[in-house]
Amino acid sequence: IRTNTIDALLLFTNKGKMYRIIVDNIPIGTNVSKGSNVSTLINLENDEKVIAITNLARGNENKYVVFITKNGLFKKTSIEEYTKTKRSTGIAAINLKDGDSIANIELMNDEDMIIITKKGYSIHFETKEIGAIGRVTAGVKAIKLADDDEVLVGLPIRDKKETIAVFSSFGNAKKTNIDEFPLQMRAGRGVRCCKDEVVGAVTLNDENEILICGNPRSICILGQELPLLKRDTVGNLMIKD
Image 1 (cartoon, rainbow, N blue to C red):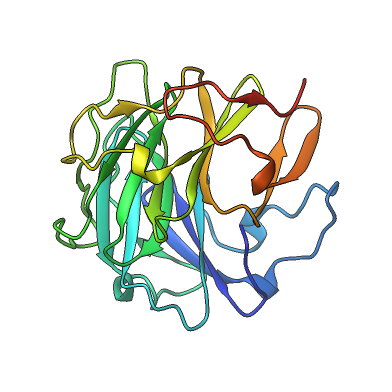
Image 2 (image 1 turned 135 degrees about the vertical axis):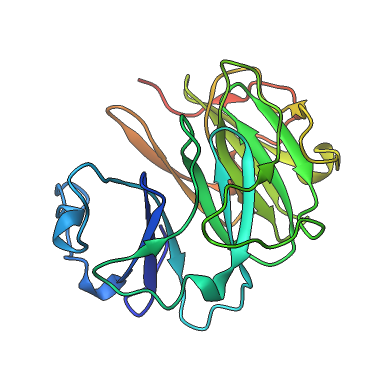
């Protein structure tokens, strides 16, 4: 997560709670060090674990904390409900239904969003018509999933000149213009954005650097090195096993 030592991190757990820590309180490591156990920074219950993290920058101007769950739910809540939490105890953040979990969390205003799923489906919808709700709630359906599919990520669209980059489990990657993702009503099946199993997706411009983490190798490339391809394609091989 791109951050700064004066910023805060919001940590969300499988119990539906949120904890807040200052980045400067996290011990410094290297690219090969194991890191410190998160339980040394916050007081987790025995069976509680962190499942999602987002950055809260100083001077943040976003109005909402937006949750996307793996089962395809969308929830937005006023950011003010999360910014007055104690470091040690945390607060209730979301009501997760049985079998569901957090896919990712974004701090945003009323931008459109594109959701990407593991099986290569996507849906582009407006968020401005979805009302903000309280912390201890579940949200509304954003995408209709097949039985063997799950949401990987929800991407706010802040600049329509950027592209959507999609990465597959086979090491293939591509970028696609945002206008190839048609604006739809939420809760639909969406459209295909990749023919392979997807492991990640981001919005980017050509000047961005991307770190692709494989097993055991990783590679860092510029956004301009990704091929610009149509939505329903596989992409080019960028990293080998």
